[in-house]
Length: 140
Image 1 (cartoon, helix red, strand yellow):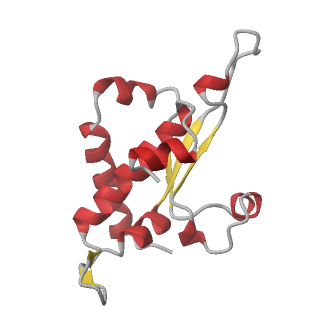
Image 2 (cartoon, rainbow, N blue to C red):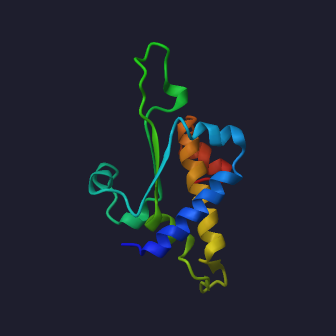
Image 3 (tube, rainbow, N blue to C red):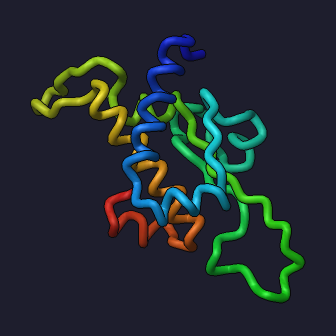
């Protein structure tokens, strides 16, 4: 789906984004490790009613911190999945271009920013933020 060199470029950008996060946020990624795939699995697409793999940039799986209880048995498996195809599509692709209204899309800086937004969006879900909260914060 995505060429090896594009995967490597994406993964290097992700590493830089993670390195740029505050230490307290980076530490939380140990509780919800980040996995990267080209696209969501067919099962994930069915579960979320997604027909086009480029429509999904990321997914938080697990119980958010705000919904956990001391009565829970523990052993929560929590992950953050990022999907290269969706993120690159949302950014406008690897190459810069202008739309009819003169807005600039694409390019490495846009891909990096979309990685950052998607990662922070999914970390927000880990902390219990819903879509409205994330939209208000600019991470929707």
